[in-house]
Image 1 (tube, rainbow, N blue to C red):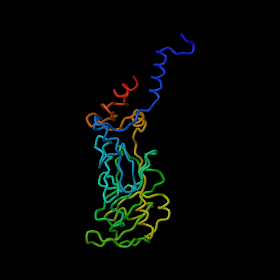
Image 2 (image 1 turned 90 degrees about the vertical axis):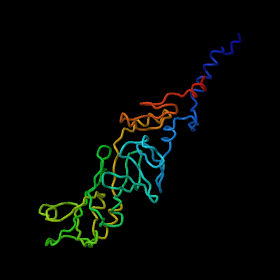
Image 3 (image 1 turned 180 degrees about the horizontal axis):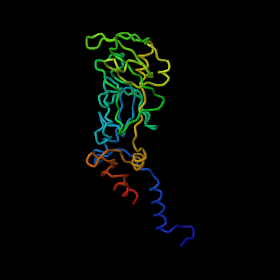
Image 4 (image 1 turned 60 degrees about the vertical axis):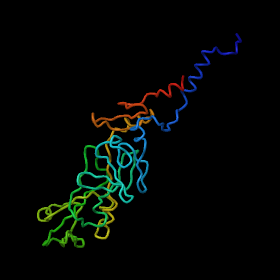
Length: 261
């Protein structure tokens, strides 16, 4: 045998290593699992795009994300509902798992038709840093204290006085005598410069929420060419693969194995 030639088994082994190092294209095939195909799509609305797990809604089925993460697009504005609050999504930072949101009912001023406190789903979300609670007090007159009042509101055809505070000081009479109060988080920088003329902007700028989800679990699934999702039967993470779901990551498909062999 020629000393410079390779045995046939060695050549086959080299070809195997060569093919194994090639990343198989991830284009969708007609026989892919429909849940895999659906969960590889992303959400886009207005100026926000490429949103995927743990979010779902619109073009993504509810098995593509977690409960409480449904998104809706209304008039090109991305929104999420938490308890009684509809929140307008201003920005999404997937890397740091941060949503920048603002109360939808306070987008046109501080006189919404219903007075509801800000509440979030603490199972999956927490408030971001550098925030301060803004308390809006409604229907407090008559008061003799030297408080800063905003322009009066008309709520459900009734004229209502409005005042505010970013810190409730001892002796402040409003918590005890005002008929209604609403807490809305605002940025600390906005709170420090708050006055009647900057109030609307402070409310429109919103606040940050951080979603608390295991990102490593989804990353490992995606690295194996899977699509992250949620098993509604077991209430647990699922990795949708081309052929069938997995609890963790995807194995090479039959087509990939055939190519390698």
